[in-house]
Image 1 (cartoon, rainbow, N blue to C red):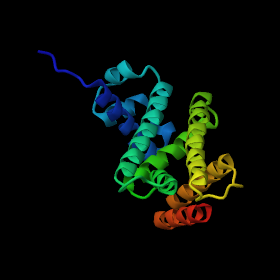
Image 2 (image 1 turned 120 degrees about the horizontal axis):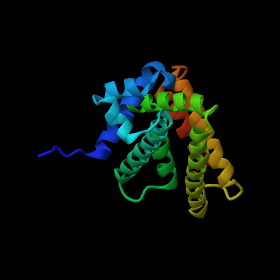
Image 3 (image 1 turned 180 degrees about the vertical axis):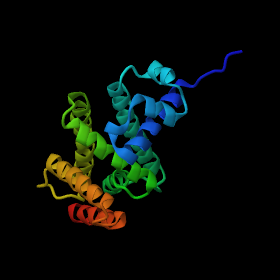
Image 4 (image 1 turned 120 degrees about the vertical axis):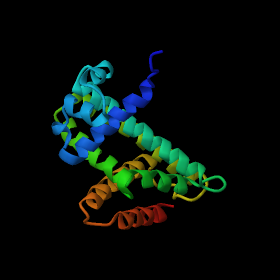
Length: 197
């Protein structure tokens, strides 16, 4: 009887192999053959899932975004009671900062994607579509804070959301470079949220 293949598991394994290579030597150093070897499958098996390197890169980027969203959900479900908008934002930000080896790897991969996306419209489109959703989510939390009387009514939720994204992106990059520790970066974001709420 032929062995059943879990296609989603295999696609995830390919994405994780790509991430390991991207962290070690950047995305340009990640050929289809190298990724197949790292994932422990043949090149033909990899090409069954991804016809081109760009297809594989787009899937891996979407997969890392899905994993981060899942971790945010798990973190928020772990909070006792109904989390406040500030707690929701801080929980989300924790997943965007390189606080452990896994999130550090994720951030390094995102940096590699960023560099490639500057010249690759397909990858850039992913950021153009994903960031507005994150901004809308953050702005919704700020609006909820305003409705609860926790955020000043004169604050513009869209601006505050954009500033929070920019703050976290900048701090995450500097934490990877060890200009600040990840804990210092998290403390700076928490302080910013304390001033906002």
